[in-house]
Image (cartoon, rainbow, N blue to C red; front, side):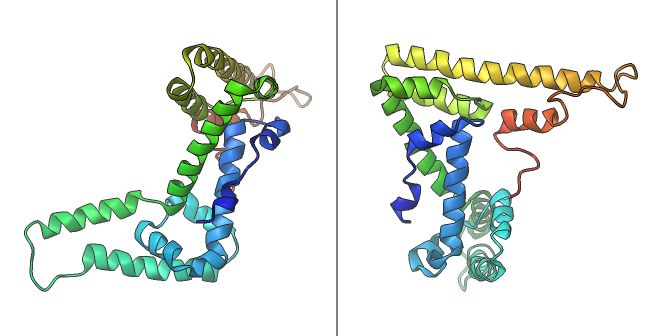
Amino acid sequence: MRESIYTIPVHEVLEEKNGCPVCRIRNLLEQRTLEYIMGAAMMEPDVRIETNKKGFCEAHYRMLLQQKNRLSLALMLQTHLEQVTHDVFEQTSLPLLGGAEKKAKNALRVSESCFVCNKVDHALAEMVDTILLQYSRDAQFVKLFSEQQALCLPHYRMLFEAGRRKLSKKDAGAFEKVIAGLAQRTIQELYDDVSHFCRMFDYRNNTPDADWGNARDSIERAIWFLTSRHPDEKK
């Protein structure tokens, strides 16, 4: 896998100040990985060996379908199905002790593995390390990070745990206050919008000129906050 596709300037991502910054980085990493494996990399032996063994999760299969290159996906599925047949269903000439259990484990491994998840998770962890490094060294970066619009719950946890591991106690304490402030502000806004959504179904409020404010898509945004994924997101 070419490292250049994971070269994402963190400052540029943070300057956008739209939603969760870690979600934006994750989405960029996913898109670049999907485009890469559906392009010339599909014919690279090392990439095909990995995709044959690991396959993809349900969410990333849907994202691959969105790439509008059904032949490339079909070719990857063809050899992946061959690999699954070999690992899970092919009979050996000499029965081995525990052979059935091994095949069951292989089936579980394949069903729970994903080439894209592995690549993106690894790259995202490195990007989080970059965020923490710059946070500990650059006052302007601290200001830029503190001005982010939102932070979802899964990425709040990711940043919190990484900060505890990577930062000094002093820097970790300050960092935790910043990310807690972003996440708490996000959840409070969502709570207010979801509550307003619920109130709008009271017959006294449900009039043609009723002011819904930001409540109409509050359910989708609340699901995003809790999972880091919008339910209507194209995958």
